Image 1: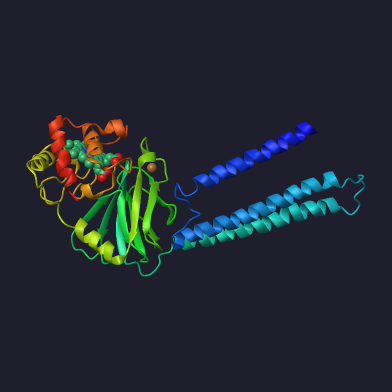
Image 2 (image 1 turned 90 degrees about the horizontal axis):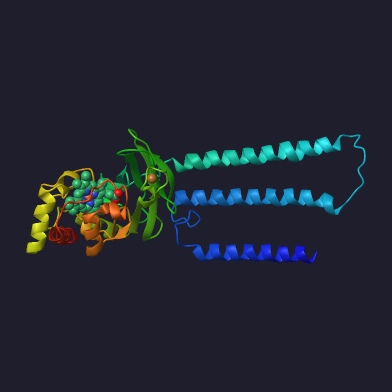
Length: 339
Ligand code: HEC
Ligand SMILES: [Cu+2]
């Protein structure tokens, strides 16, 4: 008996410990249970509803299993088939009502999630690549006639319905902003649409939610929600062609970037570099992180990335670059100046 009690204490202790560990971790990875937009709120609400129903069913079933152990009755004949009626009600009718209700709610949420808020004011084309995200701004609301292309960083105005047109350059990926919008697949040769409205300013982490190859785990991006004025200013800046280099070192870097292999994969708007395999580098210097959020954008990190990105993100679709150390320094000086 004593051993039994010790076991209870140990189990209870373990549960408490794991609960406190879970609470301590809360707030780190983005959670669907901390929504900041209408679509994500619907997901959170249906999660809590399912949780409540499942918890209630669990408690009732456990109670039904314990009651016969506590109240012992002698087995007796069952002439009216009460046992069968019990199974009919609790085993068939009630579960059918619960599952049917949950199914209907699921259909309702699904159709809400895939209906546009009207009218959307900003349209962004999202192109998924192994293993980074390309964002292209177009249409009204962005306040710019010129092209805006970014990588792994997307800005939106707070409180404004935004339309996202999702496509992929290679395999199937899935676009997910846990606090803002449910997962939507990006499927080859197809454009899927999703919408989001962000209710408060902030930086939100997004990720790829469909395994898409070795570096799937480092295919993250950041959504920056800001006031309409700040958003317009950002778009206007990103719409400008690349800044001119201001030092001799950066000038050497520019000629390397625009005349060597980089130019066949990367675009720097306003120069001869117009490749489309990798991210647009026109304003790469303004990004806080590079490589699908894998490293922060410091001169040292940038130099080791350019030297051999395979050391940082093994399998990445950018080969090691045959540049001397001083050439790499020149390229870094140029790219860091592209704010
Ligand atoms: C064969 C194509 C290819 C070549 C050549 C190439 N890159 Fe890349 N580069 C890529 C791809 C693809 C990525 C995206 C990698 C990822 O994050 O998964 C990338 C990413 C980058 C990034 C990070 C951008 C960001 O915002 O995350 C920088 C900086 C960069 N390349 C610079 C260079 C420079 C400088 C050169 C020339 C010295 C070069 N690249 C040559 C394909 C290439
Ligand atoms: Cu993926």
